[in-house]
Length: 358
Image 1: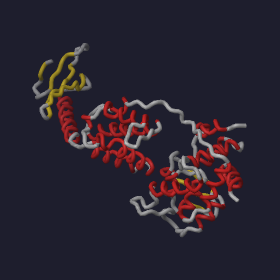
Image 2 (image 1 turned 90 degrees about the horizontal axis):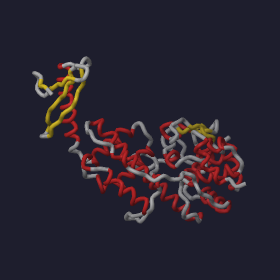
Image 3 (image 1 turned 180 degrees about the vertical axis):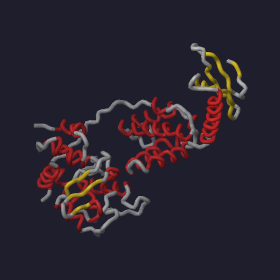
Image 4 (image 1 turned 60 degrees about the vertical axis):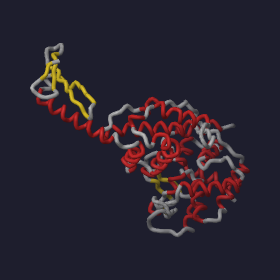
């Protein structure tokens, strides 16, 4: 390797007889050496400029490396918040705070590796945590996705490091849903919801009985409803499919929405938090009350969607019809419910309410 007239720029002759330029420099006492490129694409002038760019990039990285994972994670989620849903923001923040913050929050990115994260995920699966709770593999996968996303973001702000999320292991899991309750239990659940004391929460849970997801309904706005045409829309940035959903409004749902303080615009289910609509914590509190009254202590809120799927399959409706109720973009997702089969969206809902609503 031979030196040039420019500081830190060297070259060697490659097999084709051309010069290959190499940069050498140090930042904060650490030495760096990088091959830049070969003639004819590279010349001495370009090599000098590239060396300065490298030095600037690494210095920027050194500055950013002084930030803790807590600080960098906050920057990461904020950088993505505008392009993704509120539910994504809620879930990733919740999982970070609950499972990762106390372990790695005050550390620096280059001081953390996969051996720090994998035991956390393993303990979640095995129930070796303060709550003695065994988490589902799908939840554990969210931890890996949280780390992968953060470490994919770091190079964009000048922190060059390996993505340790790619080395994390999550066991394979069966995503088929094995949930069912009897007709008597389902009728009891419908009865509790339809006669719930608070009209706001009554309308909210009735809407969930139409196949919508928890936070889709929570963040619904008056301007997305069309009472004349008996339809409502869920915008693409407000639902999991990321496509505009147009859904039928049953007479039951319309009746209970009209009983609320109807507005021209704004959130239907207003809350006191920063989002302006009811919080996940408030929803979970009300659901625990409904679940207790209905005698269904182990039923999750999301199981309402599964209940609709199973009832639709067992009543002979097509996967396309059931998928239209649940907002599935593909029948492949709806096929999860076909394992429960033993022997258009409005039709499925009408059948369900005729069956369980007096």
